[in-house]
Image 1 (cartoon, helix red, strand yellow):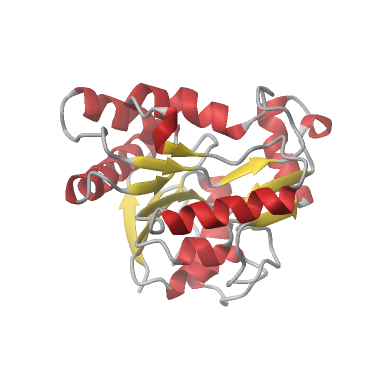
Image 2 (cartoon, rainbow, N blue to C red; image 1 turned 120 degrees about the horizontal axis):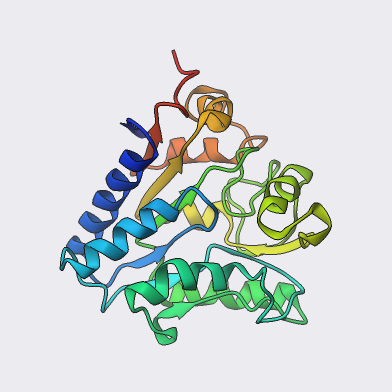
Length: 243
């Protein structure tokens, strides 16, 4: 059964998410972790960096696997999601490249790159903790509406909703790559623990559907309701439409 933790506001959400992640890393310091990009997790990242500096947990053994990445861009492209994650979280936590497995955005054969990452996750023994954001259309990673719940790591074409929401980061819709690579919903459902973050009134309608609407591939986040250890942390604004 999906667990829901209510937070008063964004700051409280970030603190509660940090407590959740720190607890997981204390239980298993060598955890293989996924973290999302975007605005919502930035507060969590700041809290984690501060907690690590205070000695609340040891990051020296954890590993990171990237959730998704734009395809057909250069490794040093400003839009590369891994560079965002590295800047905001991985470098401040002191996670070196040897403990990070990231999609290669410039791969000439996206299918082969997806297969490489699929094999790598299996070699690592799977994902221990997947921290995810909730997309405006209910996507998880770049698993857009219509993605099968047993989908695996693969190249994808971004939906119009995702292009619009990503445009805020890069300047315009024209600046958003149309192709991407992502771990599949099937990969995410194999994670031992899942944490989903949702903040703001603009996420209230999709969160309400994700938690209580029909379970359907039209809304990928509903797949998480079958997971035995999936937790949503949402602030009151994001929960404003729930009865």
